[in-house]
Length: 340
Image (cartoon, rainbow, N blue to C red; front, top):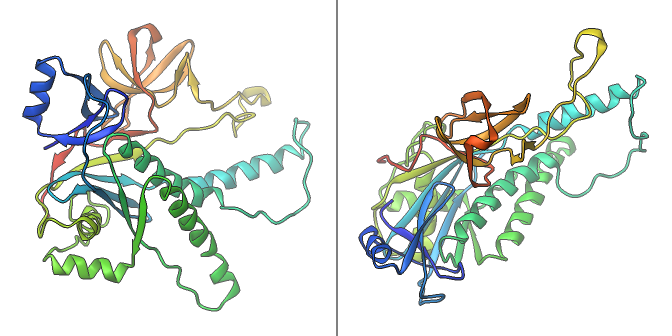
């Protein structure tokens, strides 16, 4: 990371500084070292406020990958690429199937409700936009972001009822996201063809591999959006990418899908593991930095932040030092450089 985020003694985000300046402030006792879910920053001890410049965030939504760039006129502070939340619709379908099957057995279940207009935003659509909003709020606690530029997603209609109705949740979800984002700063939108013109004007090319983790895959669009709003550059001077992957939590269910021997269905799911909230980042005596998974026989499982693979299933809670709550992990560790 080329520039270190700075917050005042009350937690207000200030302008980032050079790493050498951050080390000097810490050495003189004027600041403390801090970490916020993978991002190193410093907190000043003698200042609560300061003069800040305009900082823009470019957002490029996607069906599989999302991209966000935090940029001022002088510097590109952070490029983020995050995997999209794609599993909610199947989970809702499974929940509906389980609920209906309980009604045919001697099992506790709520009474069937009459069909009624659902209204609002479908869970799968809302989960996608909530994920983007969660990242924006997290970065707003580290950088004094004033403007947001989002590539607007247009739902193509055909005049056919079944086709057109399937796109209405997308329109509803994005407008909800814009209204929530407006509480953090000013919001502007650009259409896809306008983003392409900005990219071509800067002489940048977008990778055809949409699942790539390189800067050219998606962050190139978020960068040109932020640069269009804030200005200052003709070429990206910082192509390091922070890769995020959302964690999938299995909420507490009445029982598991498949019964065990004797027709007994064991309890399944939950968000607590021996006093830890699942997904929490901890430091283990042997496995180091990792996050908390499930629990079994008064032991907890630990998972790798880089790959999500399970490291162990029998960690003792007293051997883990809690660091922070999180609903995502860092793919590939700390930010790395990738060139377009």
